[in-house]
Amino acid sequence: MGLIKSWVETANSANAQFPLNNLPYGVFLDADGAGSPCVAIGDMIVDLGVLEDEGVLETGSNEPVFDVPFLNEFMDLGSDAWADVRSRLMDMLKEGGDDVLSGNDNLREAAMVMQADVKMAMPFVVSEFTDFYAGRNHATNVGTMFRGKENALPPNWLHIPIGYNGRASTVVVSGTEFPRPNGQLKGPNDALPSFGPSKRLDIELEMGAIVGTGNEMGRPVSVAEADSMIFGYVILNDWSARDIQAWEYQPLGPFQAKVFASTISPWIVTKAALEPFRTNTPKREFPLLPYLEEPGPMLYDIDLEVALAPQGKSETVISRTNYNQMYYSSAQQLAHHASGGCEMSTGDLLGSGTISGPEKDQCGALLEITWAGAEPIELDTGETRTFLEDNDTVTMRGAAKGNGYTIGFGDCTGTILPPVKFP
Ligand code: CA
Image (cartoon, rainbow, N blue to C red; front, side, top):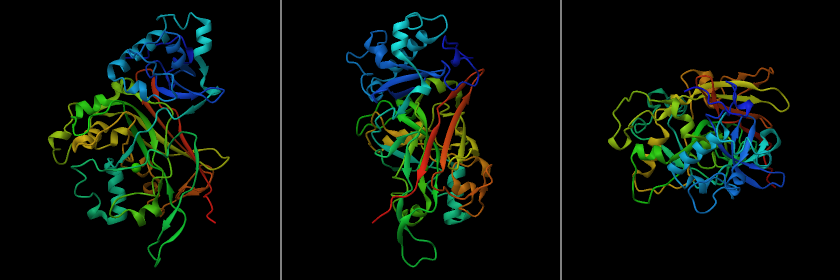
């Protein structure tokens, strides 16, 4: 399938992030700061609250679902409603389709705004955030640095999609600034720990899967069911303070090292838009247990890149990789999450784990790119970096490349402010 042409001309170029094939969901803030669910098309936004209110967009629900500043109520309607609304919106926005919007100046004026003129908000209320560790190159690199080459992969790694429960409260939308975290630090030669700003602040390039419909407590789901429960994907930066992490992580895993911020891209790219880009997880070293077996390809071919910009300076792309590098898919992670009886809910966010390719400039964390700080990288500005400096801005981008079109996610950007001073 090639580009589906829209009457919104800016949606029709091969490099546009938001062609009609994409139609990702977000929440934008109007001039008064009120949030409304929307879709992106070309350089425009379509306000779904207005379309619903005007009676031209039905969701199958008796109650409005786009009159709130989050997408949870729409996601909760389930996959039939997602498909119907997508198909209706496509008909309304495609060249030669239903002219209810293209032929009505007043409605178009009320429902459509330029993306450049608005700010994006969190697209959904994050119920809970679970982060996984499913990239084999990343797990091998980190394991080699922490435990040596022989013990790089933990013995369970090739059998279990390892994860931990993170914090939903500090998942923030792209563009949010936050201070460098403080925490307990203890270097290898320190007798006792101290408290202060992290000196080894890092990024983690991940994809986030958003659970659209949940399961009942005590009722596990198959990988196929798990796949059908996923509404869509965002790019996720799971910021990590490596020095805090190194001291605190045993035996229960990361805690303060990861809770200060996790940034997501503003647009939820639906599973429907990504369908043409499905690809298989790699060959298994050990066969997976039956409850983790995949009925078909569950990863996606999505090019990813990470760029770093010092304050007031131009950015340097420091890594390029692809989501197809993962060992476990989000559907497997979701099935594993529910397998013991855990209830998963609308708005749950699952981080894929850091995505790293086999080469240094394909890694999704500075820890790997600079080999724990031993090999600084040089930016195009001439500056060097091991870990992040105050006022650095990191931007992650993703693109699935189709035949004559691109599926983009919007930038996933965050800036590090100086640390908060303790009295
Ligand atoms: Ca992570």
